[in-house]
Length: 92
Image (tube, rainbow, N blue to C red; front, side, top):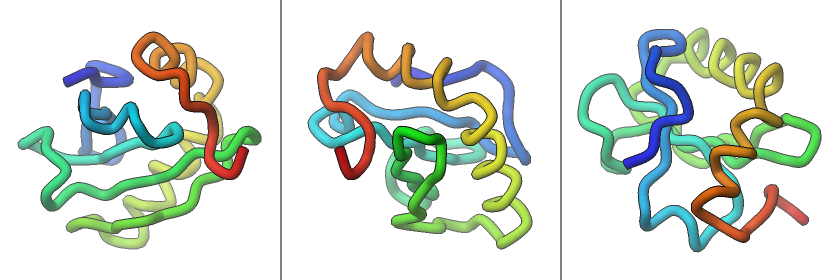
């Protein structure tokens, strides 16, 4: 299960699963179990903006921190994503 980074952002790991690569780029956020169940899911646009599909257990403050982190780092994150998937950004 690839993590975008080994550290947590707002208390959550940012990752994707091998099942995720059939969709466009997105980011799951989970604090312990790196599974889709209970995690937040952010679809990433080509400008770094995100669309929240599922908030999981995250509160509004955590969501905003993660969205800002993704906005600031989406190009680097996309390089990691592209190693596993040919699918691009959301709405492309």
